[in-house]
Length: 256
Ligand SMILES: [Zn+2]
Image 1 (spheres, rainbow, N blue to C red):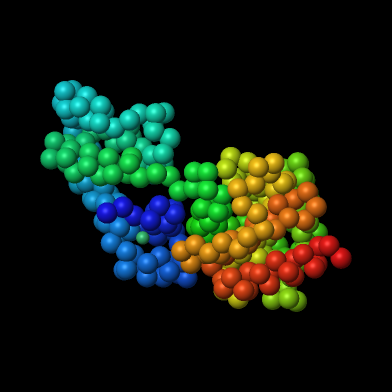
Image 2 (image 1 turned 135 degrees about the horizontal axis):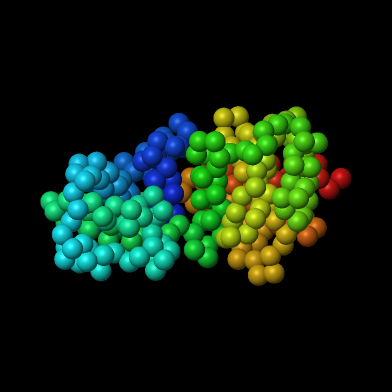
């Protein structure tokens, strides 16, 4: 049974203890009802156990090693392999008893497609989840829009409008530089009570994969709009109606 691909980043983050309590609770609730995601977490735990119990100074015989290397594509040939388990790092020292389990787990991980691909909403949700992991949320932490806006100068070649929406219930927390689909984007970070909203801003793409929609996926909402020559994507786990209200307040504040 396969896990939910669009939850892979969240599952990895949960496994590494990197999610805040709200998101951890949400992912754990899903895992309790989803056999595929539950199996995925078990596989991660198996790999960790195998690695922990392997004799670190033991080198596999040459023949055995070659057979494993044939099973596992090199990192260059396997761009979809999750970075936290680069096979080449573990191959030199794995012991005999561990081989079968490790090879099986690695094969499972290699077969798991990376979150996103061409699907922009999945990439945006993955970016949102990444930002919730420790210390990645903001590069510049301030509610002062006069600090956030110039911070982007020289880091990106466009200038996102920055407004504080605290009076409307969406206080500005800060901003950071992020990458969605290998393109730099400005990420403005807002709060709605205890929840985080990431507002990704970038120049309009010539071939948009989705437009003007509200997308609801696995507990996250993505709201898209265009103003002038910029694309806006708000991502959060708040109620879709609240995220729609955020869009309305942001547009009101930046276009008057
Ligand atoms: Zn699932």
